[in-house]
Length: 83
Image (tube, rainbow, N blue to C red):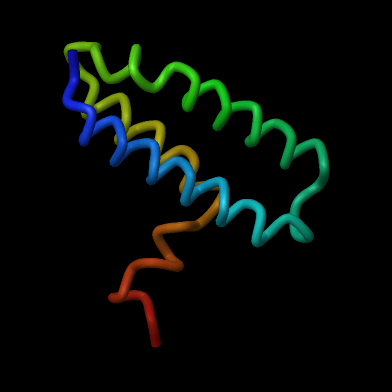
């Protein structure tokens, strides 16, 4: 069973993406918002199962990058990109 601290970390990261998406809601169509929210809910529901796979770190990193393409969260929180 994967450590709960690691699962909690990933859960927090996905929640950050959800919050970032909500903050940008006016810039996306309702259909786009619903699609991303459904994907986030599915990942959150399957988080423990996903964390048990042999390549869990790679899977989680890929999922976080894919959500980042939509939310742009890394640009908001990356101190190197602040002017």
